[in-house]
Image 1 (cartoon, rainbow, N blue to C red):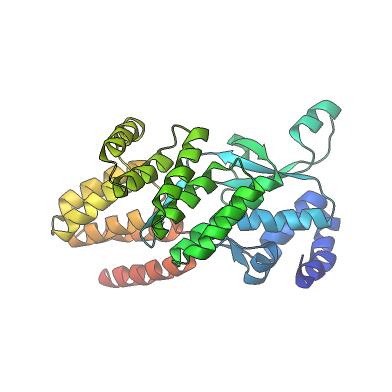
Image 2: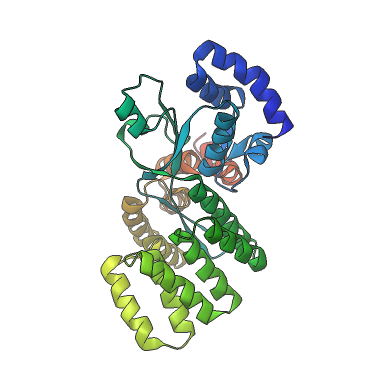
Length: 332
């Protein structure tokens, strides 16, 4: 808790909690009084998220947990079983899971004690989702590991491999059972040219999750770079059985077709990708560009609007908004 957070908790948040109850008041103060903007760009501490008034789902969970601890409100971190989201930056593809927070006694405690204490699930991506979510309670060690693993990935985007290495290692020290951190460490080693170490890290991840297609695809790249073509071929056969088309496959094929000027083929490929990734802003924007080249201005405007709606990064939303203004000017 920063000094600014403590002041906010003592004044605005305490007043709201007095009027609305501990759980509801706490969340309403965060949502309404802070006006925090969801931004997937960076993972931050509670204090940094509070100061910036923006953060991704993990940052917002960490911020909420800090306030809950301050007021001694019981809570549990929850991993949400749902289809994750893919994104790309600096030549890397990233798979993002989702976490939220349960304020109040645990499910087991509620069942054993038949307590009537207020329980509230806080989800910053979809306020209506908790009722239909399947979740697993996770310890704070896992949240810490997720935070450090995210920081490692963000360091890789900046090509700071030293920082990425130490953050990934710290994630494994925080939670040695966190498979994603082994995967991240393997990618860091590969990009640094340490191929044997990369293979060991990725094999460790596969020991924990043999059917993890993301880890397997990274291992194939390492095996090919080591000249182990037979092992790479076997691993590729396993990958095809798990995931015949990797993330962004149809998007990339569509972009290649667009580069050749074949926008009808490109649009068909983009629409196939849309079936797998309906909420990807990059994909919606690519569809809009293809439609514009085909003279479908109204449809192009709709997909640029969807790109704005689904983007989780403010800088991208600003770019899309400028494009939308241009398209709207065409119809005037």
